[in-house]
Amino acid sequence: MESDITHRGDGVAVLALRGKLNMVTAPVVRETITALVGDGHSRVVVDLAEVPFLDSSGLGALIAGLKSARQAGGDLRIAAPSEQTRLVLRLTNMERVLTPYDTAEEAFARA
Amino acid sequence: MPDTVSHSLALSTPPDDVNAVHELLERVWDSSAGVPDLDRFSFETALIELASNVIRHADGGGGVSCRLAVTVHGDRLEATLMDTGEPGDIRLSDAELPDDLAESGRGIPLIRALVDVVEYDREADANRWFISRSLAR
Image 1 (cartoon, chains in turn brown, orange):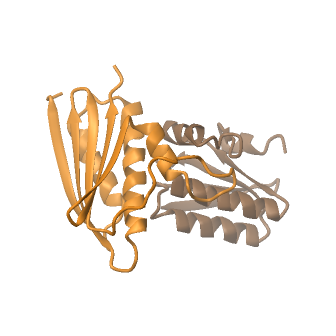
Image 2 (cartoon, rainbow over the protein chains, first blue to last red; image 1 turned 180 degrees about the horizontal axis):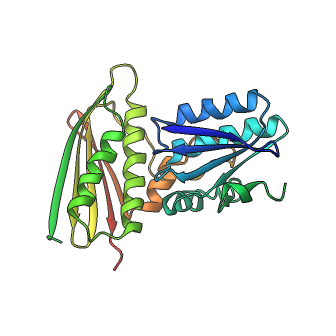
Image 3 (tube, helix red, strand yellow; image 1 turned 120 degrees about the vertical axis):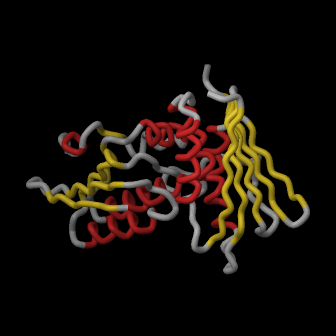
């Protein structure tokens, strides 16, 4: 799992992930988000455009990140999920909690 | 597409992990080009959830050895996973989703939502898991 972090001018941190988000990579993603929030970046977009696969372990890492972002007064949003990831979100009723945005730009446009 | 294509894999954790299952499925999809995308990623998600559960459950220190077979039939996808772990106490029946902010507990409900058949048997010293998904027509 590779990742790039972009700090936008409006204070939002965009974490772009590349690779499958499963039980092998979920712990790294969880730690990356926790560190980001710990450094004072509590508004986070996780860009999933290059993540072809996400399972319940990956979902757990995103939920952990969401909780730490909210505890710090911010939020975590997801952008550009694949069809597979949209299906996983739908079947687990998580679309209400982790609402998918089409692009990272849109994720905090209304914040 | 031929009527039936089977692929199998022996896996030992550690050092193997669920990425070996993804790699097996890549070979399966390469040789069965006619399987629709929705069926591919639904079946792949269910199988990865199942393998993750087996690996996590058996991770009492000694790791686990598994044998996985995936078969593409003309009308369905099937996988059989045999593992040498402790008898599975993964409850397949009460598969309710956890609270919204729970970080785990969605694997079994997901499997049940993604495939048509989920079975578990204890055979001799091994656990046998079986999943099947009918193909869209």
